[in-house]
Image (cartoon, rainbow, N blue to C red; front, side):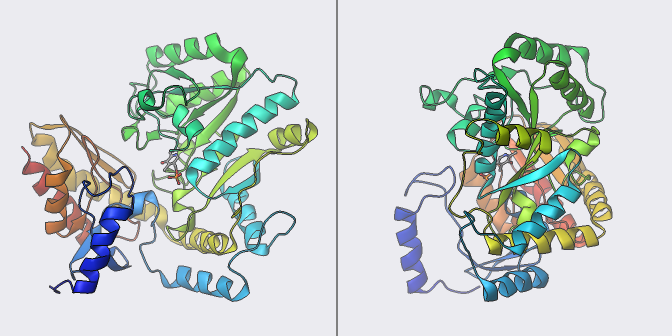
Amino acid sequence: MKIIDTDEQEWIGFEREHVWHPYSSIDAGLPVYPVASARGVRIKLADGRELIDGMSSWWSAIHGYNHPKLNRAVEAQLGHMAHVMFGGLTHKPAAELARRLIELTPEPLQTVFFADSGSVSVEVALKMAVQFWQAKGQSNRTKFVTIRNGYHGDTCNAMSVSDPENGMHSLFSGMLVEQHFAPSPQSRFGQSCKRSDIESFESCLARFCRETAAVILEPVVQGAGGMRFYSADFLRQVRALCDRYDVLLILDEIATGFGRTGRMFACEHAGVSGDIMCVGKALTGGYMTLAATLTSFEVSAAISSGNPGLFMHGPTFMANPLACAAALASLELLTESPWEQRVSRIEAGLRSGLAPCTEMSHVEEVRVLGAIGVVELKSAVDMHLIQPRFVDSGVWVRPFGKLVYLMPPFIIDEKDLGILTAAVVKVVGSFG
Ligand SMILES: *Cc1c(COP(=O)(O)O)cnc(C)c1O
């Protein structure tokens, strides 16, 4: 183990007092671990310790870190240009990435808006839905229907459609638009949809459809709002109800997209598509921030024919060429790899490796879908205690609330996956 030198202590001390981390406080927050480098499934800390990555840096680094092909793609693009504005200019990486996304996503998604983060792609999706109805002379349709336990991002409109309790809407009441929430479906993934689930959803939609622009959902897997896996049959019936009540359906595939649930997109479990779809997170293999909002020609044409005939959004770094080049290379790596076998092998490894947790009296449930493994505890864990235990066990796992979960890079081998799950069993066990 390396002794941290004084220079390192200096910047770490400075950053502690001056730099925000996600959902943290300045100075009094949880410890953060300085990282020197990362390669494959290993994150190397500045003190020399190596951690096996169980998080894929929040769903994104599906090919692991420091991948030669992704490095080469970014380096090659750097030789042409790092960025040019997308207003009035264009470039091949954006065009080729759009072509690839349209090929990979289900019908009828045909047009692509590049955004700079998942939250922004959700804002874009919501604005597209509103502009669609405006163009059709229904400018009163500005509300959204969703289900509880969702998470769609941290910007204001994305927060407004995220779970009111997990998202702490009360903190921002007065700032957030009030949306309409149906209960989260109780029918689990793999089960058919209970009638009560779809009835309560339908009654919410029926009541508010005339002021509703779209339904927005995470298909099948609800991520940061609770890591819940719900019935694909529920999603299928929601799609049918959106058609019946004439509202658009926005699918947020930001967490689930690009193979994580065992299908390229989670909506494929239900055999349905959205009118608008958001992708992000794994899009660049964890290299750069990039997201995209795809929609149908029907929606795009309506917006373009309406007043003012323009879609009113345009980020400064829209379609950043470095990010597009990384995304293209990442999608090529993914589609040329045996990712389905890899994900199902990870699924089996998570199932067997996490099984001992089901015997623990303080564990509520263990659930696994694709390359996602969740241990839900009966009460929240103290992050000050649990985080160092994971690091001391040589793994990077970042629990939140009652949830200890794994979503490793797809390239993880059996042995490293075994180390990850054994660490979860040991650390979770130590809280019993
Ligand atoms: C992470 C996430 C977002 C927000 O993406 P950011 O890139 O963090 O803005 C939106 N929706 C879902 C489902 C997510 O998992």
